[in-house]
Length: 307
Image 1 (cartoon, rainbow, N blue to C red):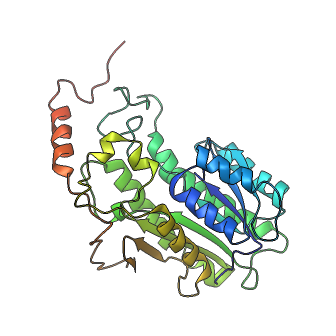
Image 2: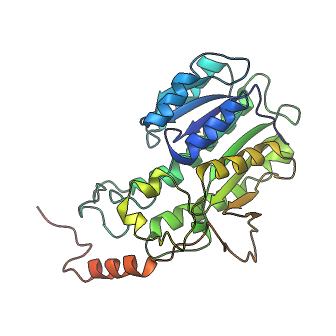
Image 3: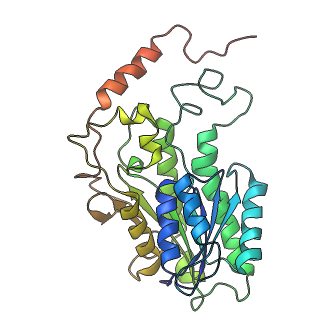
């Protein structure tokens, strides 16, 4: 069921920057309240929250809640604060994510700097952020929707919007954990398709291409993948527009995943041709791949160092 965002309340993780900030700004402009859940706010996000700290007939209200998405108690607290501030939650976006960061990276195994994952932690932080957190937030959202007053129904629909990636289809040696995480999210979204016709809960996703956000621009190792004279950026605002369409447009039913390059298209579960065209290319992979093989040629790669 399509849902107009005007007068509603959204919880957005990772709203302190990038795609999630652009989405939050768009929701606020449509008179939707937004709880910004993140570790911190970049200056441009702080500006948005400050400008929307009080109610307005034109714009929604914004509240920031410090949230570590790997801590499940903080995720529960996020919903409690949203209810305390706004009364109810209608839209949830577990959008916080990382892109094969040095601190939790397949090519820097646990115990190998600059990884901060440890051999005894039994987890990769990047998977806790990219997979476990959106799954847990979705559970919490469904629980909240079912127990709210009035409860979710066809006449009172709710929406959960996930952020996958073209990496769910086009795998890359440079980012194995990231690719695995986004494949997981696409499968997860599709598995929940029946929640919309049965309960009124729409679960959809977007699969962005190469988006000009701090995940890229603040990380020189990621920028090395691009040839800016060849590869074309997609803006965070373009992705936000498609996220809104996933919520508000009738045809984007539960289980839908929309790819966002310079062209927007539906990603099919089977026999999909895969992403192509502007906004979906990185043309300098071979250099970064050579660096990876250089790492693998170092003595003792991946071995746990004994103290």
